[in-house]
Image 1: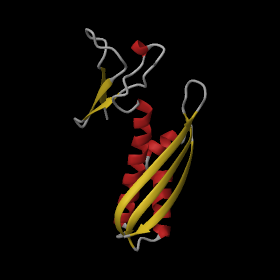
Image 2: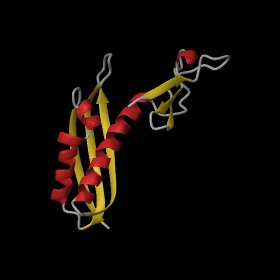
Image 3: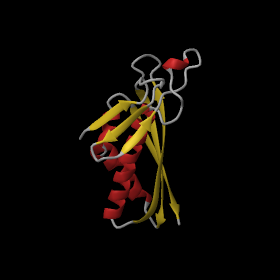
Image 4: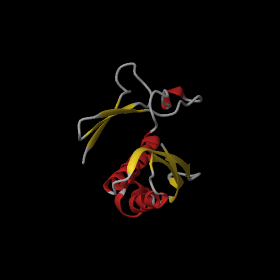
Length: 149
């Protein structure tokens, strides 16, 4: 796996803390920092997600992928899956994630809560590389609800 990240500032009159990442699969995405009112030249322009927001989003995407795949393989009629992540960070550098909660909302027809619980546990304990990696510094908790459609 590889990725190339380029700073979009620093050339000519451009400034700020924007970056463009190109993934090994050929996709691009933008990242930016928060504006710094005291030193605008050192802050971002709030034009894209922060890098740590993308890290959190990646963990959410990884685990949601697992949950949907596990439920589909179990032949459950899942039609939707949303995971809302909330995280707390350390107060001092490095400001790693210390707490992450993942709340899953799974929709479908007669999807058993036990199957959802099992899929989340399998993702959390075995399959989701991103959340397992983040679990080295953060306590990760999960919760879920199943909605009938």
